[in-house]
Length: 554
Image 1 (spheres, one colour):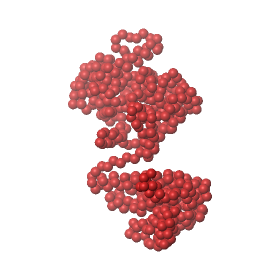
Image 2 (cartoon, rainbow, N blue to C red):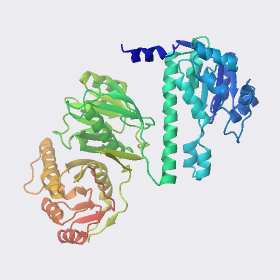
Image 3 (cartoon, rainbow, N blue to C red):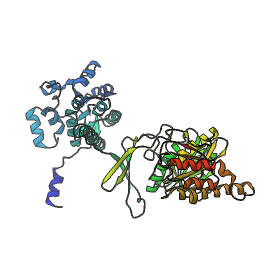
Image 4 (cartoon, helix red, strand yellow):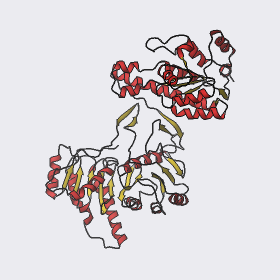
């Protein structure tokens, strides 16, 4: 060991496993539960020092409490801006209790040890969100609070710091279990939480003042709970999955694993795509089958098993090794749809007991994820894309259409509108250039019957991919039913709805659609050649509606 390393080691304070709490300083903005917590401390003989509004609340609630100015012997000054910035406060927090010099100086200056600091900060973000002016926002920048939090967190070897009311119960449990003391493991965890708290607080101030004073947008993201994955997109790439501090709602970050192997990088990416796609259909039984970030199967059903079967039928080849998300709890009927079919991940609000047992027996590798209800939507208002040297931020694509405008002589039947909206929902989740062909496979129930994704031109997405897959699927339906397959254009194409996620720059896609027998088209419109496209539809007797909303996806 080098001399410098040895010195660093010997300079570290020795942390006792258990630190008895004899004195606590409490100063909170969020007063939820603080009276009850303070009563617990007082009942254990803990001396409580407090400030301002917190002192007033505790005193009026009958909790024995000492005002900070009485403790320090110095009044609050400057409208309360200076009240805890005092050696008796910070010396009591920062003193290294097994350092003889520190102990001697504490005695000389009349400083008592503070064993617990319970502080949360002025509500700066809430003040900003409420539309307050800059003077009020600046006044809500806490100074004494972060200083005490950081002091206590730094000296966690001897001090417990509590910044979250949710941890009151943890502390109460520790005090009860350990004779009025807090364990080192808990102090360490709370210290990390405290530094995260002050870091986020400073980041919020930085972002707001940068915008107000410098007219500069600042992006500071925080993600924790990093989980090292086996590898990244490919085996030669290292990868870690970080979770958002405020992750809420159904997501891959909050999913509960009920069975199967650990998730891979690609499982997480495809799982996110499947969840976002199927969330569009959360009002009923539905399923999304995703492969390489694209829905290759997508369907609704009168029951979940019917929806799952219809989704799988959208592309039975690509569905092999897919990630599936569904909108309803998986019951045994839905579970049995996957018999003999290889699936990487199945994501659902929950699983019935017998269905869960069946799926675990089916494959010990099948990853089963419980995510809770989907109806509330994603908690994230924005999405981010990293590019070399920078980060792009945009609003989440949460909308579907802006208008419904039939622009052709042929009218779009009302009876086709729900099918059209279903097709729009899946199309917005397919990589551009995207074309979708959707079918009402039984009354009021819809499925993706063919799609083209990620092509540099829209005609190829239609002719070479979507139409080819749709024809395969319809032919398979005929064979399954034992019916003869018609010659030429399959009549089902005349009942499909075709959707493009962006406008047609030329009429060539309309020519191709007519050659296939398609009669109903949805697109956003907005091309300078819209007139030519509409003219082509009118020539062929095709009905077309504009939605006014593009859904590029890259």
